[in-house]
Length: 107
Image 1 (cartoon, rainbow, N blue to C red):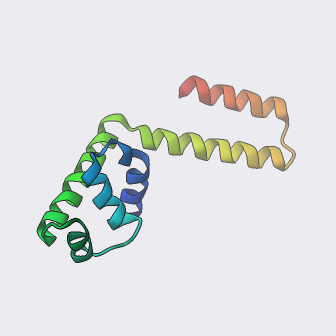
Image 2 (cartoon, rainbow, N blue to C red; image 1 turned 180 degrees about the vertical axis):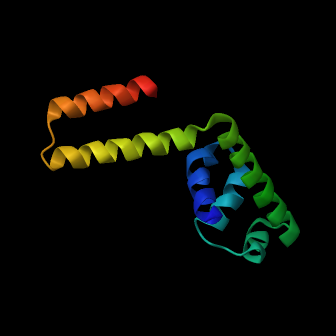
């Protein structure tokens, strides 16, 4: 389960990583390369590749722990999906608008 969460966090916060760390994380999470393949591609040791990945994951997890931005984004996206589904099934637009207004006041 953590790998899925790490992929989502990387998608959300990956732009905050420096160039080399972002490149290595992309190779690992998007291209599914092994540590050996990453090490060969960027001319570092296998341990160096592992260290980049570990530091990058620690950084994006810390950012999420401090900001909670990804969790808030997911909650808002899930809420909007639920509202859209209700409206597509014929829910009252006025009630939906009130529900959205209430959510935004809490948000």
